Length: 499
Image (cartoon, rainbow, N blue to C red; front, side, top):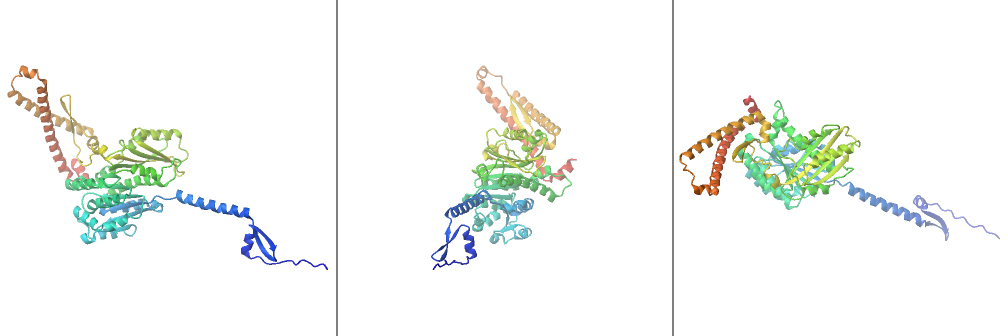
C-alpha cells in the first residue's frame, strides 16, 4: 500500500517572513525551521557597522565650536545686547550671549532677549557700583563661586566685553579674567576706552584695569570711544553714533565667526584659531573688508591697514589668519593679488590662509583678518594711554626739529600743523638765542687745553641739547594744557567753537 507523504503546512509569522529574506524555510522533524543565509547576514552586519562609523565621523566633522560672549557692567552688557541682535544668525552655531552686571534694573531692561547674570548683590544691593571701581571689584570677588559657574560649561572660546572708565566693568572684568585663566580657558577680550572729555582720571582707571587683565587673557582689543567722531556725521544722535561703533565691532566678529564655522575649500579649523590665541598679553587685530570685483586693490591695501575702530594695525603681527570668501568665479590672479597685499605687510609672521566658496556672493569678495601681536612690540608704537596728539621733538645733526604726529595731521589738516610747527620752532629759536647770548657774556676764550680736549666740548654740546629738550618739554606742556581745556568740551561742540 502506497501512502502519501503528509504535507506540512504552517503559517509563518510576519516577523519570520522578514527573516525568510535572509535565509530559507525547511522542514525538519515535522517542524518549520529557518536556516539563515550566513553570507547575507554578514553583509547586513557590515553595512550596519559602516553606517554607525559614518554617523560617528559625521558627528565629529560637524561638531560646532562653542563660544560664549560675556558683557560685564552696564557698557559691556549694552554692547553684547547689540551684538546678539546683529549676530543672531550665529545663535544656532552654539554661540551664547550673556550680560553680567551689578545693576539688576539695567539687566531687567534687556532680559527679554538676552540671558543675564546678576552678581554682587550683598555689596551693591542690586543698585550698581556708582562709578566706583573698588566696589565693582568687591562685588565680583563676593560672587567668585557663581562667576566660576559661568566658565564651567567647557566652551571653546570665551569673549569678555567691557567698557572701561569706572564702575562695574572696570573693577569686575579683571576678576572674571583671572577666573577664566585659572581654569586654563581660551579668552579674547574686547574693551572700550572712555571719551577724552571724560577726564584723565577715568583714563587712569582704564589703564590700571588693563594692566591687571593682561596677565590673565590670551588676547585683547582696545576700542577708543573717541573713534565715534570719525565714524559719524554731526547730525547723528549720540545713541546712533554708539550704534555705529557696535556695528563695526559686530562686522569684525562676524568675519571671525564665519571663518570658524563655514567649511572652506582651504579650511581654517579651530586648531588654527587656538594657535593664534596661544599665550598671554597679546594684542588682537580683527577686521572684515569687502571688495568689489574689479576694484582697485590699492584701495583695498589702505582698508586692510586701517580698521576705523582701532588705533593700531597688524604689521607687527607674530601670527595672522586671513580667510578669503567669494563665489566660485574668483580668479587665480585676484586671489594671488589679494593674498600678496596682506602678506607683504607681515614678512616675519606665521601666516595661515583659508578660502571659502559662497555662491551667494556675486561680484564681491570678503576678506577676514585675525592677527595677534606680542604686547611689547606695540607698546611704543601704539600708546593709547596718552591720547593727546603733539609735535614730536627730534634732534638731528645738532639742529632741533618738531615732527608732527600723523593722526594730528589728519584731524587738524597739514596747513594748521605746519603753522603750529613753525610757531613752536620760532619760540624755541628765540629761547636758544637768548641762552647763547647769556653764555657769551660770561664765557671765557677757549684755552689751548680745551681745544686739545674735544670731549669737554662734546659735554657742553650735550648740556646744550639737554637745555633744548627742557625747553621743548615746557612748550609741549603749554600745548597740552591748552588742548585739555578744549577736551573738556565734547568733540561735536569743539568743532562748532572752532568755526
